[in-house]
Image (cartoon, rainbow, N blue to C red):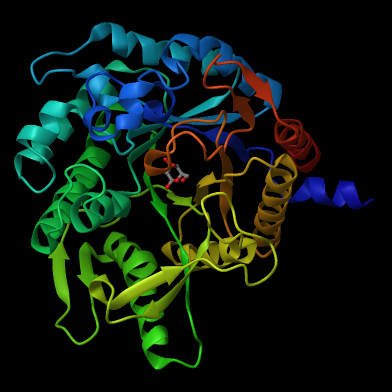
Amino acid sequence: MHDRRKKKIFPDDFLWGVATSAFQLEGSPHADWTTWDPVISEKPLITDHYRLFRQDLRLLKELGVNAYRFSIEWSRIQPREDTWDLEAIAHYQEIIDILRSCHIEPMLTLHHFTHPRWFMERSPWHRTASIEKFLRFTEMMVSSLKGVRYWLTFNEPYVILLGGYLEGCTPPGLRDVPRSLVALKNIFTCHGKAYDIIHRYIPGAQVSLAHNMSVFAPWKRWNPLDRLLKKTANYFYNHSIINAFQTGIFIIKFPFSKPVEIEVPIKDKLDFFGINYYTRIHLRFNPFRKMGVELRYADIEGHGLTKMGWEVHPRGLAKVLRYASRLDLPLMITENGIATHDTGEKVKYMKKHIDVVEKCLRDGIDVRGYFYWTLIDNYEWLQGLDARFGLYRVDFETLERTPTFAATYYAYLIQSRSGM
Ligand code: GAL
């Protein structure tokens, strides 16, 4: 009885998927990250997915997913500004064809953190020329690749800006607020224009980006400064982007200073909203830290901390979904997952978050899909190779893939919840 009631909650066309990104699986000799991080010079092929992709795509069938989010590596497609690598394009087309032949809906991300080296050297995001370069790439992809309905222009644009322009820990490695604002304008301008290009070529396309929504909390509830930080972070991270899609204006507000307004051509340029959700962040005012902010992850509710040190906070997923539903668009959980070496933890994390999705569906929130991050262990950016988000474990020496119990469990959850 219990099970039968559950089956009705997830609609038949709910997208049950996993999400990956090209560079994290296959590296690229032409990408900016390859020279940025010494881990990549030691292991340039990472999981060697570029060669082993057929075998990896078979794992999707094993899981029984009906959707797969992946990205194309721009630097493989356009290794030099004047060179399009047609073999690389054919490679990604083959992925799409395999997915289609297995009735798995592809969701394609155009930009997932990495760039061709020439792009970063000559026209990074704070230069106006970046817009034309990215749109040329977009048009090339959209006109060449056949069989993709779901498109994500950018993965986590805020992370590109925070890492590349404020923290300086990712390319182009700047700490420069004025340039970060120009980069924001250029990236979102690209989104708006790419949205139009995709629709021009593909009638019925569904276009979005993947934004990492987060839940913020004051470190000490009684401290008004911590509470102010929480409000500021929430406004910037969760509200300003939603507002910009509704109005075409980014409003960036920091305490005790005049709000900055940036016009971006993205009003209504969204067919659904892609949300990556992982954790909750506690904020504390600390005058000795950069911008007066210190953040921490704390195991407040006893769900534990992940290998990344992040708090497991399933309730937060409901919070961000509820918040995002003010867009009045279908919502898609484009990433959710846990880094851990403990499969039991992975299973618990997955179950708790999918339970939350189920509850949100019951409450009438229009969630259309859930993509677990990620299929196989991969390169986790600044954390290297040890984070282990995969449903399948990768031995980075032998490249062998082994299912974890979480893979079996995900397959079971998909079957039992969807009635597939
Ligand atoms: C996301 C990102 C992914 C992956 C994941 C886990 O922010 O899009 O590439 O690294 O986090 O940390």
